Image (cartoon, rainbow, N blue to C red):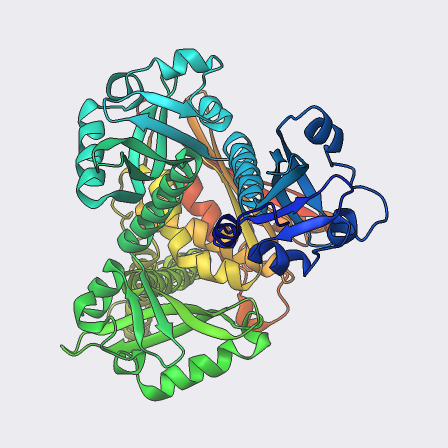
Length: 607
């Protein structure tokens, strides 16, 4: 140790590397300050005992190379006791007395090695992420070329050859419009980044992609823009779904907005949330005046709203949360009467909580007025039928009385020739004859009353008559569970007939069909044109007619109805007379207990 100058040894203490010197028998002659901090005081001990606590030299020791061959060696050493990695430099030293020593320098590189490993792992992770990411990842130059892209972006844009893709001009070959590329670069260079920037790109096959760009600017150390890097998300399918949803929403909105019926939506407090054009027209209040500003109780009365709400919560009116039908009449602010039908339901969330109420109000004012008019017409026709029946009865009575009256008159005239004019009996005969003549005149007037002039006739389309009568009978058919099936010739031609008499015929037919189907059934109404003649067939699935009644069905005063209020047996008789009076014919077929079919034939004008 004396061979080493004190000044040199003191200088070695300044180094942050571990330094020690051993002689030829492995004995430590010197350790600098940092070496002692790492391994403790070891001067005078064997170096391998100090470093690894072993009685034998260290595996990495280059004793022969240094002491014998006088060589310098560098190596990397891991010392387990310290869990550190060192760069070891071993150098030969010739002392002043000619002896040899070995100078060993241990530089701690543990931190650097770990950092390199982390950097290497980070690069590997980034490369895996870049390669396997589901969205597109890119690095591009400022001039508009891709510098690197991942496989997902290649697949997204329909390319297989990466080199071909990297040769593309972004503005011309990828962006749908070069202006889109310019707008993108202006924004990203101004802000430094873009997030979820919507733009359209073009696939290799020409199809358009809707994408979202999230990217940032790449700078060099001097702050000069090199290009851009970021990710690309294909939104084409989502955009398509959004458009389909929007189209469906717009279509539904148009249906609701342009419905002729009033459609209303209220929250559970009754505040109006939706008010379509139909509601504006029916109730006379604009949507801007009611939506979010008015309660439905301000449109209807509080009592009506409470009753409707109670009915919706009662399952017997259509099921839970539903009200199938409720007749509702009220007066608007201007005094006009609104007559209609309301149906409503409660909307629930997935947990069954009440969210809102939707209502549909149908204005039935015109329809109800038509029904009232037709009902009045029906009553008028029924009265006409009764009068006609009375006329025919009077005609029959007058006809039967005429013959005996004329016989009496002839007898009295003969008796006058046998009695002189001055005889008192002659005056009695004249008086009797005068009364008989007065009675005959009365019978003549009765016959005149029983055969009034025919109703005015005109060209008529039978389909119009049937449509008008269906308005009258539709509700009655529905109430009696009768399904009406139409099979009408589109252009049957016109018939020359009395509108009122034809109405009377079909009113009788429909009334009989309802009576024959007390538990409901089907009513088929069809028309056929055969050889210039129009056939109207009316068939019901009712109780049918007994065979013994078939020949009497059109006779006056014949009826199978037990209740006196149901009729006196003049309906079909009147129908038969009307049809015959129109140069037509009416026939009946029936299967008792199953069905009845009436066939009416009328000549078509000009055929």
